[in-house]
Length: 251
Ligand SMILES: Nc1ncnc2c1ncn2[C@@H]1O[C@H](COP(=O)(O)OP(=O)(O)OP(=O)(O)O)[C@@H](O)[C@H]1O
Image 1 (spheres, rainbow, N blue to C red):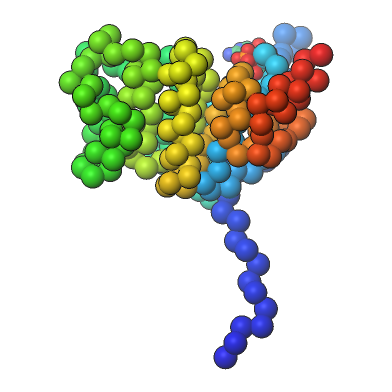
Image 2: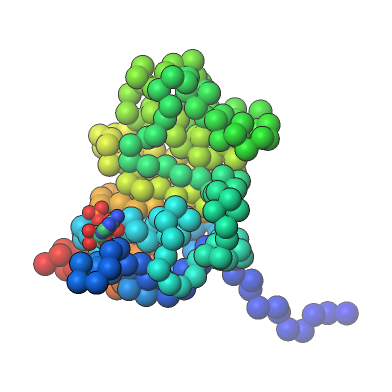
């Protein structure tokens, strides 16, 4: 029997934000950092979040990643509504299903690069698969650095260790908050090139906050926040297009 009507394509949204609001403080001093943000993040897509300083980028990322709680609205990660989860369940979900890379690397200084990379897997009680570890370490050019401690590594190498640590558990979403903010342009390009490669090769989903149009141009799309709202979206961004949108928003 031939099939006459094609099934509608299934769009797999690994993260969803619905009408998120976030206020800090109360009364006259309250700050509305998010004022009703909705967005969907398809699996295997690299999204950059940009906007002027104070527009709510970090707050949005932190609420999406379960690092901060929204005042109202919902966040779904892999179909799970994380806004209703207990603190313990949220911690477990973050550890098992999400990866994080921050501007400041956040490596433990007493541990070697290899111990830092394996840290999340070990804390989670599972043995990370050796082949995956080797693939990540080689792709990030860290093979010769595994026995070094963070102080013996350059900023770019430290961030690559942080990226390896974040990817070792094969997270459903890798969240990155200004991952190249402390790196020179060459080290930044290496980290961004690797993230791009992970999206292309493994369908890794990446959500990254950045100030840098060069970094944003590695993404599949850019979401622009202004004053706690998404005000624009740019698919297949080029550096010039991102510059232009930012100039318009800031000007
Ligand atoms: N813990 C907090 N307490 C009070 N206000 C906060 C807090 N965190 C953020 N804010 C405020 O919420 C708004 C959004 O901040 P957020 O850090 O999300 O913006 P951002 O776009 O990431 O800024 P930047 O680009 O400067 O890092 C700002 O007005 C900020 O001052």
